Image (cartoon, rainbow, N blue to C red; front, side, top):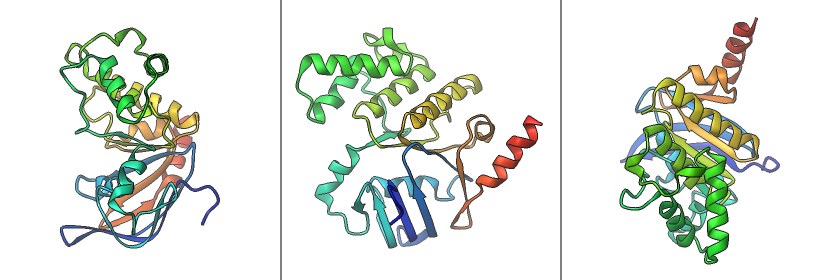
Length: 236
């Protein structure tokens, strides 16, 4: 196994309802990396993310996430794995009937935090990290789309996860706000987390360089050098 890889997939095949979505997936991802998954809708990006947190089974090959063997992981260990991941998905919405602070407290209590003071300190810390320090008392519907997405990111990093998975985190946002969200995730990767995001916004790849994998025809290809070349051409 590659030294210190947080995710390692070798010759992995992924199926959905008996159909092969992806085959020949080979990946080795480490802490502090910023990784883009790009490609058309339905090309398997979200399916790959779902295998990282045990929502979709790996059909064959070798697949390891944070030391868990995803081919043979027992159901009862999946919650344990998920607690070590930060998940920023369209359908992981905020609880609309509670304040931002209560949304975050709910997650901490659910993951075993008990001390009131520690809970408050951690919430203050993550709100500060995402630039939302003074918004803890607000309800989600009192926030803009970009602010809500910042809170979703704050929620994802509460337990200092080693891996952050973000499915189209800028998809519903205007260009400027999307750029701010991508910048925030990039900062989180520079602080040491592995951040993996799917995106259709190829402009972001130039502004916040990272590893790039393209999905097409059931295959995932590392196209990082292509984007590095584009970025350096623009700088000249």
